[in-house]
Image 1: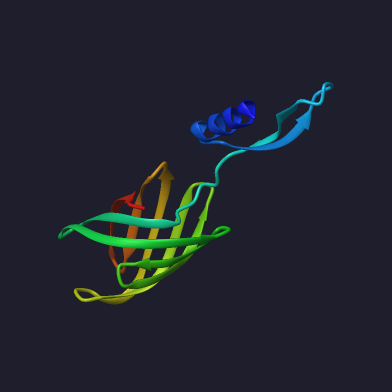
Image 2: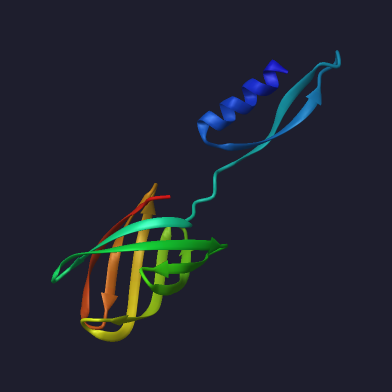
Length: 136
């Protein structure tokens, strides 16, 4: 039993999910046996704090994303988003009605590294960079 608990704790501390099964040795003693290793899934699901670098200064936007496979939905401020996340790259393209610039399509392309995302944004003839950090 101690071996089983130690194996589970070690797997949790390392942050890697292992497929474990119970096996028996020749004497009938139970032990844990690894049947393969799995990396934790990389996802953009969760709450994000975006800082967009704009001509008028930094623009702060809180976002919440859900992910199903490579499809991403959720909200960016008050606007609904749809897009994709695959191979560590986020691509969003969604309608926005800006109080300053009117209606248009906001495009976000970014790359995820741990709980930080950096990338570019485009809206009408405007554009810039952004940095986002996961808050949950």
